[in-house]
Image 1: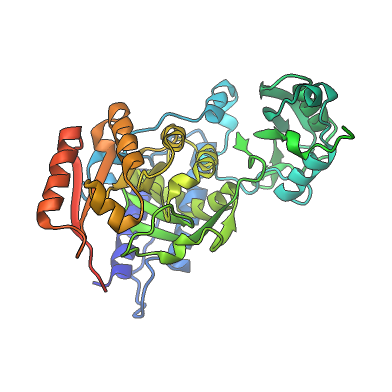
Image 2: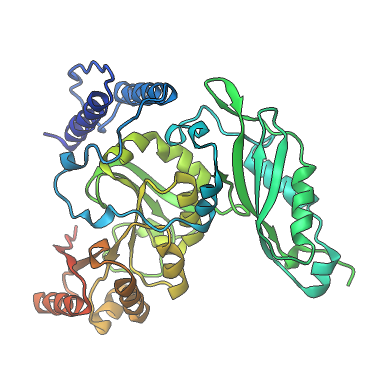
Length: 214
Length: 209
C-alpha cells in the first residue's frame, strides 16, 4: 500500500477510536480516491474538526473526555522513550495559579485568541515606541527582560497587570504603566462569545537601543 | 495563558512535514526543520539547511497556529513536534517559546548533533521530552573529516544529558558512512556509547545517491 494511503488508514483508525471512546457518532465512508494520497484530505480534516467540536460540546456539558494516549498502541511498540512529560518552563509554571480551570478552553481549542489591534507585530511596535526607559536604569546601565502577566477582559481592556519577574531600577513600573495605558484589544472568543484571557510576555529593555544625549 | 513572542523571536524554517508515523519519535509527529547548521557533513541530506537566511520566517506563535491542526492526533498517540534541521539547538529560544504555547501535553523531540554550546542544551532540556542524537562517529578524526568540525562539544553535551536524563530518552543514531568509517569504526563507536550509558542505539546505513 502506498505510504499516503497507509497514513490515511491509520489516522482514520485514530479518529474512530476517539469517537468510540467518547460516544461520538462518526460515520466513516471508504475513500475511493485512486490518485496519490498525502495521508489526509479535506474530508479527513473535516472529520477532525467535527471531533474537536463534539469533544468541546461534551466538555461544556461537564462530561469527561478521553483522548490522551488513546491510540498509542496503534502505531506499534516504540520505546516509551519520548513519552515522559518534561519539566515545564518557568512561564508555564505560572499557570498553577489559575483558579478558574473549568473556564479554560478544551485543549486550547478556541475560535480566536485575544489580539492587539493590527496583530502581534503592531503590539511589539507599540511597546518599542511607547516604553520609557527609566533614567535610573540608563544611569546604572541596567538592561534585561521584565516578564509581565496581564488579562484581556471580554470588553478588550487590559487588566490585572503584574510583573512576574522584574529587573528593578524603575523598569518594572515602566512596564506596568505601559500595559495599563494600552489601547483596547480584540477579546478572545469562544462560540462567538468574548471571554477573559490570560497572557504573559517578556518586555525587553535593551540599553543599546536607548538614544541619549550623553 | 498565552505567552506572546519575546521581542520577536523568529526562525527560518524550510519544511513542516505532517503526519509522520513513529519516524521521529513516538506517535504522530510533525517534523519542523530549521535552517542553519554548524556542521558541513559531506553527505548532508538537506544542504539547503546550511544557509541560515533561507526558508520561511516564523514566530513560535505562527508555527504553533499552523501545526495545532493535528493536536487531536498528537494527544491520542502521545506524539507532537520533532524539531530537526539544520541544527534545532541553534533555535533554543524559539523552541522554549513554542513549548510555552503548546503546553505540556505535546511531545517535543529534537534531532540534534549536540555540537552546540553547553548552555543551549541546558536551556532546551527544560522543555523537551527526548533527543535523537546524530553522533556521526565517536572517533574525533573521522568526525572532523566528515563534518568539518571537532566533536568535543558533542561528547561533553552527551555526557551531561546522560547524567541528567534517563538513557531511554536519548536515542543515539550511529551511521555507517561510506568512505569515511568502517564497520569496525561503527562497532567501536557503539561500544564507547554503551560504556557511557547509552541504551537506545540506532545503527543504520547512509545511502548515497
